[in-house]
Amino acid sequence: MKKVIALLLALVMVLGLAACGGGESANTQPPQNNQNNGNSGTNDNPGGESSGDEGGLINFDEDPYEVAIQFVGLFEENSDIPAVEAALNEITLKKINCTVDIVPIFIGDLPTTTSLNVATGEKQDIVVAGLTSTMISLVSDDCLLPLDDLLAERGQAAMEMTKNVSEASKIDGVTYAVTGYPYAALAAGFVYNKTMADQYGIEMHDDMTMEELGAAGAILKENGMYLTTHGNSAQVQYKFYNGGDYFGSSAEFGGILDPANSTTIENVYAADRMREFWKTVKSWEDAGYLPPDQLTDTTTVQEMFQAQRIFGTATSYDPGQLASWVNDNFEVDVIRLNDPVISTGSVAEFQLAISAKCERPDKAMDLINLIYSDNDVVNLLMYGVEGQDYVAVEGTENVITRSGTENADGNKYSTPFSRFGSQIQMKVLAPMTDSYYDELETFEASAKKSLTFGYSFSGDAYSAQAGAIASVLAERLPALNAGTVDDVDKAVDDLVAALEKAGINDCITANQEALDAYLAG
Image 1 (cartoon, rainbow, N blue to C red):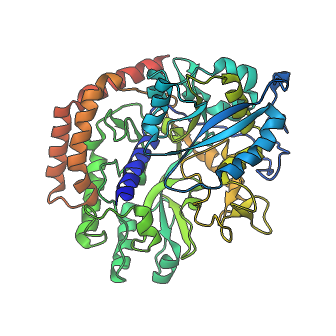
Image 2: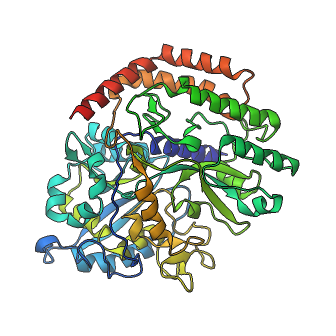
Image 3: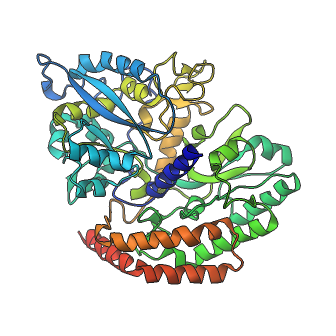
């Protein structure tokens, strides 16, 4: 039970921060796809096959420096890390004269690990920004080094691969991180049990409305199955069906519901469209489309989906989303619910930064640059050792599977939260196909760019209000999300009044003023 609770808390942090608009960015023009993704060290990335040595700067006469890099996960054993390190070192010693120390960190510990290690001087070189702590908050805590000079001198490949997202990796014009999401377009989506849909004659399609999902719920109820679950969640559940930019883990500092067309920050909980969303959810609950024990059942939505207790769940959508949900028991598919947007929150999940106490920032940058110029390094970090942690799917160029290996369950090596390099460099997990790379570029090109792209708000001066707001949301939001309130209008009015008493309007005013100043240049 302790692990389940910790996992739920971890996922709450990640889902909240992934769309908070808290200091990351996105790109509009991805690198040209060359269909040589991930199979060998012969890369057609910017600069071709890279030695990792920018301008002959690597000193091969000195003793190799060991670069410690954070590796964020859940409860997996990751017992194959030594084998991955050994394979990496065969490359890094030759190309940049360093070795790699992969340091596993449970995601629930990450928010305190980086700052604590900086304070105590514990060795850490490359650290994760954005996953559970926004880049701007880490900079405010003096945890990160500025990277512009290092990138210009030793990080040309990383700069080239991420140039279209660089704007949102800056604070006051200074770069502090390099994103793992240079392809940053995201939409709202719904992943579902396709085997079940085919069995019951449910037609799922892109741009499906809430009303159409409800109609699917009626068919599912007739067959003894629940449509979905929202659990005991104090998150902005609306965003997984409709998208948007949200500032803070749960929009404590407001949000923009239509970021491609608006720069007005509002109390999203008072918005009419949010109220209508909750009324729809209540209609689902009243009709029996949702599990009646949502507020007490601690089973994660992922576990309920895999156990076929629910038909599907709302999720972020991009061309690679399907790989996160596949299993051996039934066929899975995912639909897109709205148009994709490139926003600051799109790349908030994962960026590589250098610790302020790093002994050799030059070697840390050498490794970051090698990650963005060598596909073998990327795929070792992402998937482990070929033949041991995964195998190639016959008849494909870049499709892999863990099935049939000792790592089939991902416990020997998996990266549920880590992102190294660019999506275009990575192999893809079945049932995805080699067409993924073209689909990725098409999806990216179809997305609109948020009007607030690159903007971040730290909220440090409003931490007391944020804490009070979070307490209100924890108390009142789960019942609204689960559809278990008696009267939606009254529940929303009471929520908004409590949020205003907690100071949300002051937070939004300060956020809007900062955004206006940012947009004014």
